[in-house]
Amino acid sequence: MRYGYRRQVVLQIGLSVMSLAGAVIAQEKSAAPGEVAPAKTATERFDLEVREDIFAGFEGDEDALKRGEEKCEQALKDNPKNSEAKVWLGAVRVFKAGQLFQQNKPLEAMPLWNKGQKDMDDAVAMDPDNVGVRIPRASVLLPSARNTPAMVREPILKKVREDFEYIYNKQAKHLDELGEHSRGELRMGLADTYRLLGQLDKSNEQLEAVAKELPDTEYASVAKKWLAAEPKTKLAHNCLGCHSK
Image (cartoon, rainbow, N blue to C red; front, side):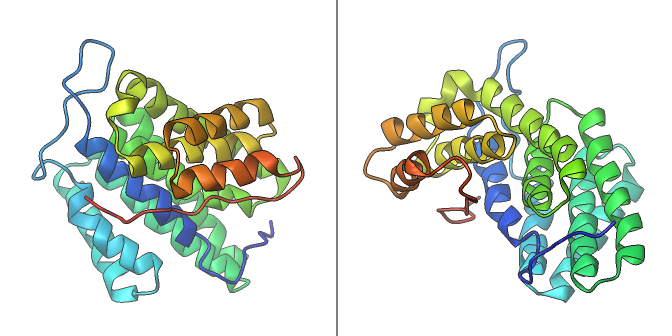
């Protein structure tokens, strides 16, 4: 199977959405039954142990990527049920598969691609209510899906939609308490996913909310451009903020 990846690092866009994970996790509220669990402290958040290395790796620092990967592997040796370590390890594997696809090495890429996807799916199955698992999977799969054949794209995008809708629904009562970056990235991630799935009404609903809730921001400016675009216009959201913890 041949994947038409662009020359740029295939998942570099993904790290922009992944930055949302830390922001949302950090702002989770004490929850009633059925809502998001209380926020983890910095010492409990596995993403803070690896994400800077992995982000740097996605931007070309091979030593940092290896360091992040090894931290994930060690964490899983210590605790095979560490869902966050598993999802981040899966993210690294999918990223490395993307690099191999770019190098026209599909026979080497496919096993790594499949293993990485399984890692992430297993992590979500293991810990479905964990924001720190849901968002990294969506973040990696969204840009990956953009570059895959149609027959593969839809199932991937449905996973992305599931993850973003999950976190959106769990945050629904607290959306007005999220900062500009967190709210903007969450809504734009949903809008992007819906558009790729052909659900333009739902995409536009998120874009209209961005324009209304975040006026006079870059998010609102981008949302208005998307709303004015023709349905067949190819659009892709890139992170509009920093990777703050």
